Image 1 (cartoon, rainbow, N blue to C red):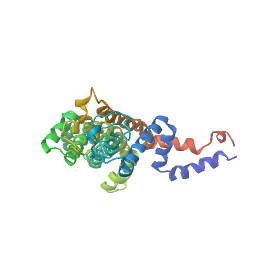
Image 2: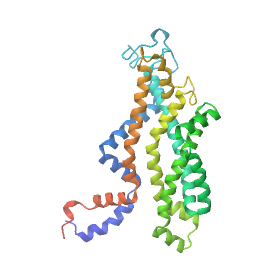
Image 3: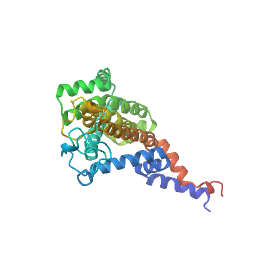
Image 4: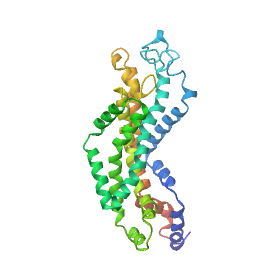
Length: 312
């Protein structure tokens, strides 16, 4: 059996060699809800990537004689819509558009928010200007601001992504700003300042790893809301335009047929709900996996077997 001194001496090397992906993987495996969420998202993402090969029909091809046929129609497992288009094919192709419209604004807003939040926390003058601009955007409810910007710029995928990126920017910037302020007065930052470390290196090398986790966790939990908002914009005619397959558009197409063909709106609505819940299930696990204090505890528990802790 190993002695305590040998185990303790092995800890620093073990802790140093483990990456963020290791802790994310361990966290997902340890949390059954996060595991379910990750499996759902993996299946949806895989279906979206393989849409040209696994979709039974082209999403724009119609079968007029079979329009409004329900679930279980021969050769059309999930039925057909009001124009006779295969629902399963439209849902598979719609997953590609929906995920892209939901994830891209979150990614772009994080890219902008991280440097803005770091600079705002480091420099009070710039910080006051940046955060006052963010406060102006905070004054508008997220959905109403997205509708206003999308209506002003016009319908379309690109304009919708720009509108959603602007809407998300103040929220993500605030998260980064608060996390950076907490790190600003830490001892390692004071040591870096005392050693005349250049400011860019302090911000983007020393502080960034401890701040980016907050942005990633927030971004993961907000993807679901953005998917709903993007689907809502498409539902209102301000986002993705027909005949492109997108879950919001498909839901909008079926609202006139709820009493005789409810599956047209029901199926994409369920798909949106499942994906949103799956993203939310991953939020807590990513927070624990990317928090340096939590990952240190996880690594120590893994490094020291319980049977060895009392041996000499």
